[in-house]
Amino acid sequence: MALRSVCQLWNHILLSESSYWSTIGICEDTCWEWIEMMIERAKSKPLTLAIGINRPENPKPSPWMEEISSHLAPYLQKCEEINLSLPMKGLKIVLDRWNVFATPMLRTLKLGLKADSSTNTNITFLDLSSIHMLSAKPIPLTSLSLFCRATIPHINAARMPHLKELTVTLSRIPNGRDGLNQILSTLGELERLHVLDSDPFSFHDLLGRSNLKSVHLTAGCVIMQTPPKQSFDAKITSMVLNCAFVIEGNFDVFIDCLDGLHALEDLQIVSRGWLALQRDHITFTFFTRTRSGLQKLRCLDVRVEKGYGWVPFSILTKFELPSLNVLQLHKSVSTSQRGSNHDLEIDLFVPHLRHMTFPALRHLKLDFLQETMISTFLESSPALEYICGKDTVNPPSEFLNLLIPTLHDDVSWTIHSPHLRGIDFEFEAPNVEPTSHSASDSDEDEDTFEDMRDRYNDVLVLMIDFRNSLAEFGLCPTLHVDSGPILSKR
Image (spheres, rainbow, N blue to C red):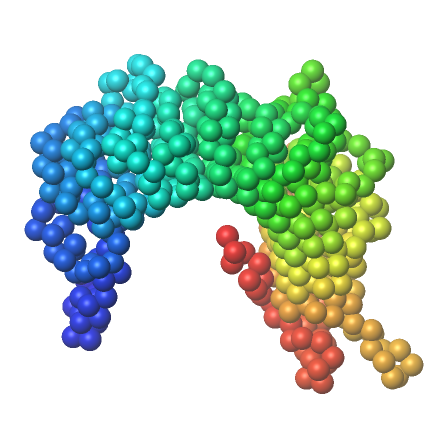
């Protein structure tokens, strides 16, 4: 509405373009005249209806739910997406009102049950087959989201033959793991799965679903077990593991599970904790065979907490990764704020990384900015274009010498990282642990960091100027202090 007052042209564009009016959010304070106006301006554009409560502290069914559901019923045939975020009784009111109306264009349905007296104390049963528009005949629904805590969803797959995407919450449900297996076994054509707050379940349950292409686990717990001898025909291309991990054995069990993902292209790991069954802590090994999996992996994004910095490097050294294009190794925010956060185990991986090559790696975000680690990646990544990172360490500068071109016999130049276009590192001074030293000692430590940062900046400017002077002759790209498009994808 504010944009309409800019000028007559903007007002005309906003009023005439139906896509600006086709998504309609409705709550207790929404007047029917406004809804009708939006529907009229949406013209023939398919509608998205989102109905929710604006005052969650009193989520009792009210007359407005009956009134608004009756008003909207004739327009259901134009809806391609319906989002309902209501208490169970309110949801039942709306769906009962819509029970006799057809939804031929419906592609996406999102049901979110707000907490009320029933869901606080009891497990409710949400039977989707009782909803007429989902059970009367097969419908073209392709996406279903059930944000229903303490609710067991019953899905009639026969009525949803085209369902490709499912988002489901399985927390606080007895036998939630069995419920997930039941859903997966029922929806044989499912391609994209997002599980929220699940009870622990086996990673193998995902590998055994041949049609799954995308898996996103949030805030749950996954059990990593030694894979069985039979191979899985897993077609998963994208996986986000934002969860806790329970490993039955050492870290090689985790590696073996990843080894079964032959089609995987995008992997994101955000650990919420590591637990080793029958062990005090997770252990890792160096001298094991290189796995043949992850040949198609293009993007690897790993976020680690203090004490587990070795996790991404263990993954890197166990696979060849010929297609890896984007690599992002993050430290958690809480870790980077602690000062000295260097995991000594990381140094043990440097000799192994030096014998590796990442031929397709173009974008690198590295929050482990030790001298040897940066130098190793620069030498092992011939196609590197952008590199950035942030760490709480004294700024190293020796690695910059690798990026300064050298002249041989006055006729030829050797340019390391010949495709490099952007470099952007951020260093924070390590916090000095409280000791009995005098204040002058602390000042000396701070001066040491400042001196090293000044030296780093001086060498950085020299290196960039030198390379850019050669870029004028087409010998290498122009180099900027810029992280480029490394993080643009997410």
